[in-house]
Image (cartoon, rainbow, N blue to C red; front, side, top):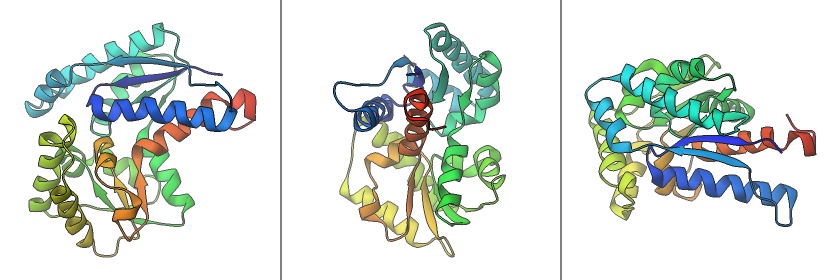
Length: 233
């Protein structure tokens, strides 16, 4: 079994879900006492969040690149950045290591295309929804990506940082997200484009097909990790 590298802590709430899902999926596929082989580097999110707000993306990229190098040194065969937003510095992280970094946007787009869908609504942090780095990666797979209105983007972002990142899950916030999703005109599916959103929203909460980026990312990693045993790519 290959060793999965996790670059997490952004926030640790969603990184814990990455860890849990990886182990659950390996046990489901291999049975018995099998669990995932993992190397995890968890950063202090307060430091990264400050860089985000101040627009210091190069500094944030260097911090994550250094962390990624430590994951590689720990024996990881490939790496996941356990956050959608910080894929803004994906190229910087990939350049710092010799192991592959599996892009979360690619795994998500692959699942969307496999479902026969081309137009999707995107929920995420303000950075992910406002800036082109994530949408353009999805669009490179032939997808049309819709984002909420400016007012709704503020609401979605606030709930992520003020509530979900600190472990607060409120029914009122779930309803607010459902209202935002209902406004997507022409969307055939919805991307939960922030790893914390899966703590709040599931398929049961939305009439459209939902694409949970954390689960899709981990499924792709587990497929890769156990390919020597199962023959999967």
